[in-house]
Image (tube, rainbow, N blue to C red):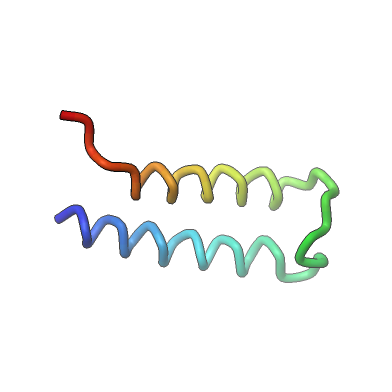
Length: 54
């Protein structure tokens, strides 16, 4: 089940990054809403790949 959730997380983050950077330069550092949501999505994907605490 964990592998399925990791795959879904990667797909959702990639879709969000495509939508967020559709009309802006890829390394544009202006603080638009798309950049903020992209950072939150990347953090969520990293959290999905962290090992479980026992």
